[in-house]
Image (cartoon, rainbow, N blue to C red; front, top):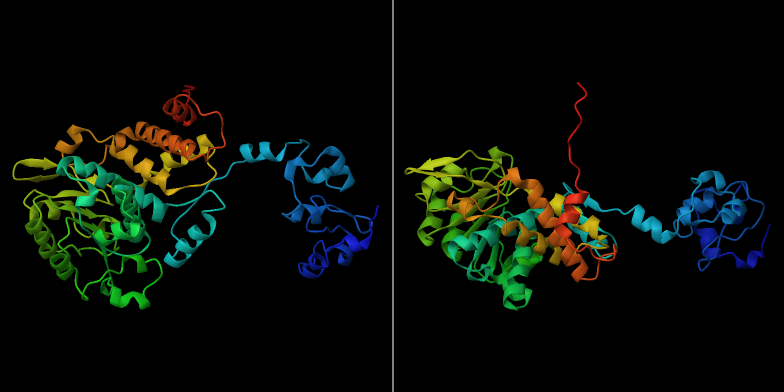
Length: 408
């Protein structure tokens, strides 16, 4: 069992520094290959096929035929079943969700793999989608569109910039304006103050798109008075930063200020629900990242909503899986946001909610999954064909029901 050694890629042999499976340099006399050959040729007698299995360029997994397994000494290394690579891709479909990475790692990893793998970062994309849903729902109360607003963020990390980017994209889709233009409606404050163009050279890359022309402003209250936002969003991770002065300034500028204190746990919330309602005399539209009890003000009971990522990622993930999505695209996040916002009822609005109750989470997730799945098919990124006629029923049929038999 041999072949002319001129067929061997010198680059492959010389570049193998692992000490395992190095072609003619292998102490066990294992195999090597040219870069354009799918299955490895043989140099000398083979002791085992571990080299072949360890090389992702040539390992076909269960797609090796019985003859190939015998020839390459890998029969005992694989289960006794042969599946084509297409079937393996469908059967062993993988969706990678990651979170809690440092800012620079999170953005770098998402940027690196989003075009080649099915990856999703919950801190950046999940948070953005759930917050956008609340903003979309709130427009039904305010009678406005997102393009009518000016947004001010306290916090410019993964969550803040991720939310800002999805808002800008949504406005761009609604108005037809370029995203560079719609970003100008969104301002961010970090630990050094308002992010402005004079700071651009010193900013991390993910903050640079938000550096607009304006004189420097150090404090949040100063930024509120200068920018005059209609929406104030906190993603700073620092508690009590939406002070009475800040919230009262928002109430002076707006009949119904939209205030989202998203940092958690509760002790790190930028303000409490009670503070938001009290300082705006019951006029605020409020939601938070942490749960707060209902608040009674001036004889009216307010139910603060919670912008929790668990509204989004289960339904989004189910929609990706049941459609066999090969990539995650921003349009899928927009579809998830719109599906969530559409499930807020008039009764919910009357109680001050801009999110539907968690008690309906299975129904909510099924509808989000259906919307994400529909968008996946629309974009041509679905591999589970043909498309099911009823995507909501399909989503419900894929859900696990934690119901157990009683043996007593």
